[in-house]
Image (cartoon, rainbow, N blue to C red; front, side, top):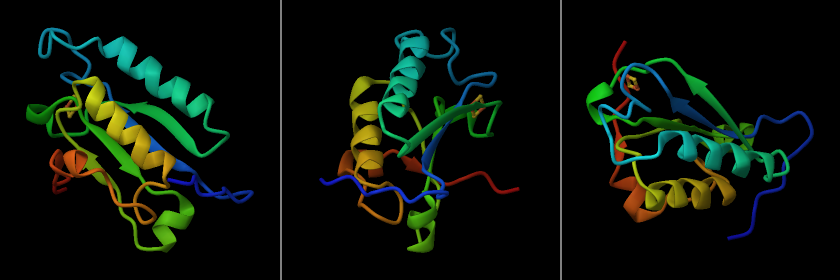
Length: 127
Ligand code: FES
């Protein structure tokens, strides 16, 4: 897939990586190298030429589905109708592969998510 060019002043597609009480906790999910996951996502953002941003968050709510990553649309993706996608159980490299492929293609509103990633989408918590 061809990356979508980014316009000056436009907000990039961004990943909100939950690192609250459960997400990123080795006691809850001992089979995952949580620090390496976050480092990988940050490296991808650094290499993206401004197309991807990554930040961490305190608990986002759905701890039972930890680790949670929210994929937020870029300005252009939102303009085209894209909305934040909540991904649960982001515990393995395949899931991160899918997230990075999707965001490289433009993310919500611009590209369809990989089918395997779509299976991991969850409803956002109701406020
Ligand atoms: S710690 Fe991530 S949803 Fe609660």
